[in-house]
Length: 146
Image 1 (cartoon, rainbow, N blue to C red):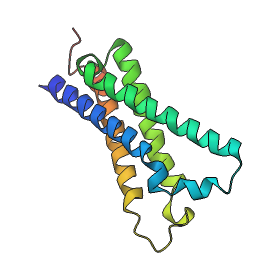
Image 2: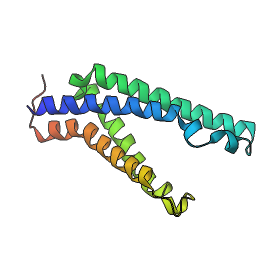
Image 3: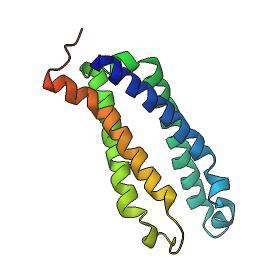
């Protein structure tokens, strides 16, 4: 029962990761990057493109791995544990980074309703829980590995 819930959680995390890839594909339109890039050096705009594209690849790869290998990742053991722990801590960092670095009052969003800010915190926190859960369950001994 627990392993099925964990497996479903990992698969859901894979879908959410793929949705994050789509979200990052839309960055340039959503955040009017073209006008911002006109104000910075070509090198800096290329760095931004490169980092964003790397994140897109990361989300696609990990999303597909989560969907294809949800059973192994949900075991909380071996390489599955290493991968899920790594991804969990990425999401923990991302959640904390959203709170501290993208705080609406510090991001020039005064007077606007910061729904996206809080939504990203919530999604990041949920993804941390989804990906750390198999290790926690395995360490607690609630599920035996095959």
